[in-house]
Length: 217
Image 1 (tube, rainbow, N blue to C red):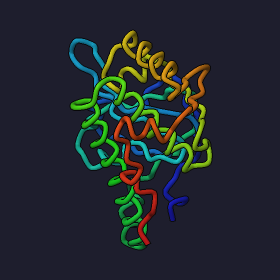
Image 2 (image 1 turned 90 degrees about the vertical axis):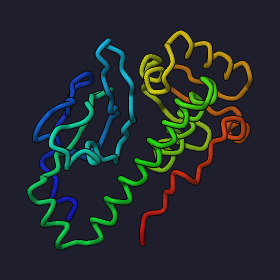
Image 3 (image 1 turned 180 degrees about the vertical axis):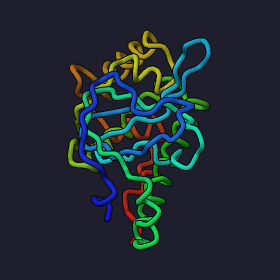
Image 4 (image 1 turned 30 degrees about the vertical axis):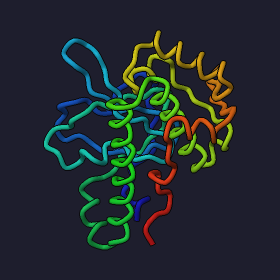
C-alpha cells in the first residue's frame, strides 16, 4: 500500500529546497537516499535547524495537514525522493488501518526527537547538546544499517551542526576539539567515531529509550 502512494523516484541536487516555509499545497516525500534538513529562517537571516532527515524518513509528514508549510526543507546532499500522492493517502488510510498506526508512530517518534532537541537548546550546555545530537544521529544510522555502535558517515558541515544545536560554528569547533582531546568523540573527514560512547552518553544524559525503535504491533 505504501508503494502505491509513491510517485516515481526523483533526484534533487544539494542546496535545492523541497518545501519552503509558507508554501501552500505543499507535499510530503519519502527520502530514499541522501540527507535533508527542516529549518526555520528568522528575519535577521539566522537559521534554526529543526531536524535532520536521513534515508527512510518521511519529509513534511507532520505539517501535511496545515494550510501553509510551517518550515522549509532543503537537500543537504544530492538526494533521491519519491513524492507521496496525498489524494490517495486518505483512501489508503481507510483501506489499511495499520498504515495509519505506522505513520502515527513515525510522527510520534519524530516529535520525541524534536522534544529532546528543545531540551538540548534550552537547558544543556554546548558540549552536551553537540554530543547528544551526534549520539542521536548515530543511533538512527545504526538502526537503518548505515552505521555501527562506534562509527557512522556524517556529511554535515560544521555550520549545519552549529545551526542544529544553536551555537556558532567557531564555538562548535572548540567543542569538537574538547570532545576529541577528552577521548570521547572524533568528527573528522565526514566520519563520526565514538571513542567512548557509554561515557559520552552518561556525561550528556543521553537516554536511548526515547528513540523507541519498536514499531506498533
